Length: 313
Ligand code: SAM
Image (cartoon, rainbow, N blue to C red):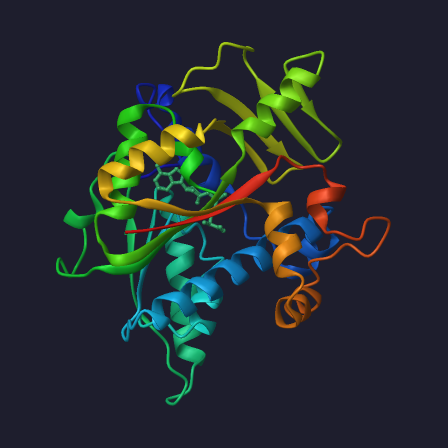
């Protein structure tokens, strides 16, 4: 399916807008990226995901999992492939609505595999292009017996909160193939923070010269389909939906999930940065903006608060 040229009928569907936005994003080389004003924020987000992924992998191994399988739900172009590789997992399923991104993700994986040595283990992988708010991934898997230790859904889940049906399907895809004791981990914007900033603003939008969040209307905020537009420099320009966390937590109970941890990025940072190995990774990844702000791009870009959470059943 060519997601880049939606038909008139499809244009009303936000999933199509999202797919076409991500499909059209160009791969930016590191040199250009490092010049980008969002360099540190991107690195900070990557550091945060690395720490979260690393700690989750430790947990599943402590719980006795020998062969670790992961579902990367909304994998994009494969920005987390290296994290999974460093974590020494055995199998990865990557799924995303944007076909071009999934192709790029697969090419990255094949490159990684080609460059690996015989004693340098690389996980097996499967790539699926699917609207995970509409299709059941379990029906698309090559191996229908596969179950996951971790489902990772990084900066994705908010796209599903357009309707209850879509949010539930995404959640079902995230949770139904988890092994007992498996984790659903993710990052998504903090709806409370977004609304707080909207209400503090004298218009329907807030932001700075790097990012902008624009709502179509103020209160009352519907539980589903509460749309806002998020733009970040020339990189992101896409409709998103508020995720009302208490409702999300309630919905997850249908899939036998219980909340283990929910933190804002700032809280996660404060906690993890105390550990030497996390701090040295942070330095290696250039995740801290040296001046004028000492606490990473999240602070300097004043971007919306986000949290990470982990769930298990
Ligand atoms: N997880 C990746 C990362 O952390 O680098 C990519 C995050 S990107 C901000 C959001 C991704 O969600 C995009 O690749 C987009 O195509 C994907 N996405 C949005 N809606 C989706 C849906 N309904 N089904 C599957 N993927 C979706």
